Image (cartoon, rainbow, N blue to C red; front, side, top):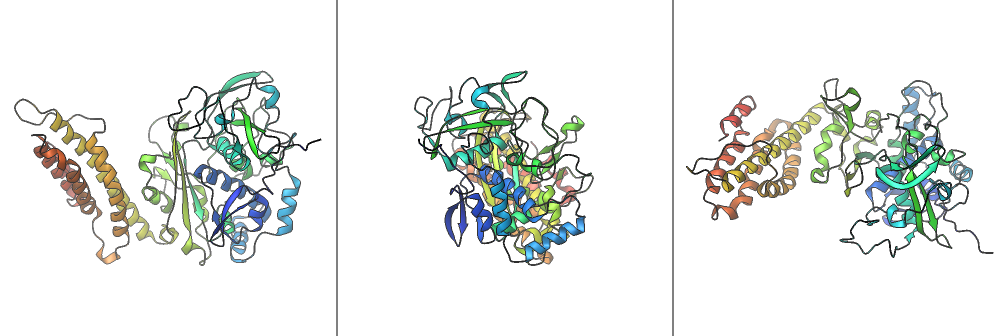
Amino acid sequence: MPSAPSYPVDQRPCVPVLLNERHHALGMREVLLEAHRIQDLALPHPPVFSGLLRMLTAITAELTGLDDPDLSLDEWHEKRTTLLTSGHGLNAADVHDYFDRYVWDLYDQHRPLLQDPRLAEQCTKTSGINRLVFGRPSGNNLAWLSAHTDTAPHPLPSDEAFWHLLIQHYYGDAGRCTTRSAGPHTSGQATAGPLRSTLSFHPHGATLLETLLLHQFPYTGSPLHHPDACPWQEPEPPDPVNPPPPVTWPKRLLTGRSRHAVLLVPNQDGSAATDGYLTWATQHPAYPATDPYLIIDTRTRGKAEDRDQPRRADADRGEWWRDIDALLLSGDETATQRRPTVFATLNDLPETVRPRLRVRVCGFDQDGRTTSRIWYTALTPPIWNRAEEHDPHAARRIAACRQAAEHLAALLRTQANTAWNQTRTPTADGAPPATRRRLPTSRWAREALALYWPRAEKTFWTLVNEPPDTQRDPYPVFAYTAVDVLRQVTLPDLVRHRMAGPALARAVRALRAAASPDSHRTKAARRAQP
């Protein structure tokens, strides 16, 4: 009798890592055993990186005892400092004991990892393997740039199936899904995953273990009234009928807020998934919770419950340095942005650790429902010595330079749009047409901003790294960059359009007005308007 298909992720090589300057694929058990020697995870998809880091952080919290809610704040920091400076890895016996206690098999018949075996009976049909894989077209979607179709689906290797399982739980779609009947609920509608369309910021250390310890954060709420557990520690899959358990620290907060239920269908030997089910996990509203790795932006208008929103990932705004001041500034009651919670725990790091702390940025540009545009990632240089708690002048300088860059970018877009409008629709008497608000982004504006941001990044770091006694006003420097790119973009049209020259001159004058002394900057910009 052939054996049942099996793929235990704790033993099979499903996690790419960078170890001894070479790439290896390890099982999750070995990843934690070797975490003090592994430089970094080497996962190819940023959403998988973001999801797996949360999963490993929750496991590390239990293995190290940093999930003990009875520890005082001083005791917690002292315990983490000891772990960071010990030079040792995690206790091997504890790691083996942890993984031996739970089921890690993707295709276990009774308790498959992060899946619900009841879907085989509760769903009307399978969803198709393409529906589970981000990037593959499925259903009635057109396959413009993909060889995948639902009529001839390609099996998904089991290691990649594990990756996309994580993406679905954290970044899954809202809207239409496979119909599921559970108790009184029969529905084919799901709500969005807890991290959908967000931008995550992950502290990054010299080794994976250091990174996971930097990801920890102490408990600061009231005493826990519900047991805290990860999904694989629960005796049964999530209940689709009753409300989900409250969001507890740190395990349910990091791993237990999925809105989707998944079940993979393997081939005979478990080397690949050939089909699967993707549907809703609960029809109850999600509990409010703040993920510790997201920047929170506060809106000044709207309903009180909707004012705090995670910063959205935006591929058009993909330069990570544009968010750096939100990480370095501690903020106050008047601030409209709040840095990720985990960064508030990094001020008491040992002197050997703080200077090398970097930040991994993982973004997934999506809309709120079904469209996934692109994912991206970046790794910052060491920045934490410039945090406001350690170097207030440097943090404020970074914020000022970032704000100047943003101000000039917005002005560049406005002036490029206005100049384009004046060039394309001149009036009969030769005077410029009236300025219109909310113009769509013109070709000049798109091309100018595409050139502006890479140059602005170089300018930003040049300004930030200037000695304190020779630091320049950032506005004139960014204004010069904006003028230069606008001239470059409009040069081919100057000989083709009679009004292009005067329109460009007015736009340049407005951009140069932004280089005026700060007290006269707004007034000068207004005078420069046509």
